[in-house]
Image (tube, rainbow, N blue to C red; front, side, top):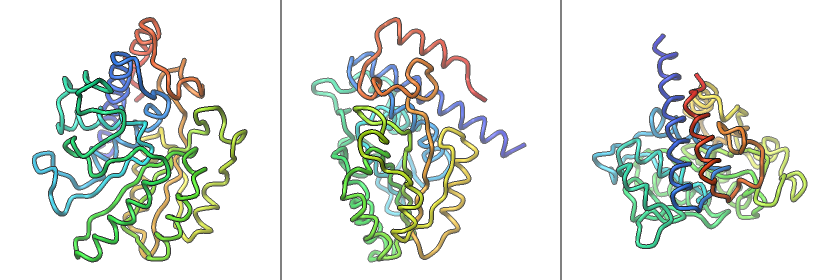
Amino acid sequence: MEFKGKIEELKIIANSIRKLILKQIYESKSGHPGGSLSAADILSVLYFDEMKIDVNNPRMRERDRFVLSKGHASSALYATLALKGYISESDLSGFRKTDSFLEGHPTLKIPGIDINSGSLGQGLSIANGMALASRLDQNPYRVYCLIGDGECNEGQIWEAAMTTAQHKLDNVCVIVDNNGLQLDGRNADIKNVDPLDKKFESFGWHVVNINGNDIEQVLYGFEVFNININKPTAIIAKTVKGYGVSQMENNAKWHGKAPSKEEYDEALRELEVIRL
């Protein structure tokens, strides 16, 4: 019953993240709802169950690190930070607005952010540097890096993947938000990245395939990471772009489109029915 209760609590948190994603993007008339909504369940588990962090001491030396390589999904991360208590929910009204500290991509101005990010392809290289620093400093924190499947078109991802495996950085966990879409349409039609699991395996990674919109499976993926040794772990999280809002699901136009008042109201009504 305790495990079931945890799953239900994390689902409620993920649903709250989705509402705050939409609120930010609607109010700013700018943002990326599709890939933010698809990542909400992953962020819920990371920040409310998996990572060793302390909201009262954001720079705690032994904290786990998180890199949002797909930085355009910042609204999802900001919503998570607000729910966790790093920032206030009222701060979210400044999302992507002039003079706000909540810029379009995460920066170190924000409590709880470990690195400026957003230029696609660079996050895993940054995570590798953090993991190597952990080893040199004898400070055994873990490093989590969320990347997009479309982002895997970037060659730097694969150069970095070789480095992670070469140095046996088993404190690195990459989560691929594998929603099948990018800005201009289906990955398969633009530059096919499949099979992602076989690619990471061939680069020397331990791989686990999950449904990234299923809290129980996300929890399982991190359990596998935490018992894996001598290899980095890649969690290939199959997700639905725009998950939770039917008008946005599997629709590439919502990669970077803000909803109208009618679309926003309809989305919130739908999210009131929590998927438990």
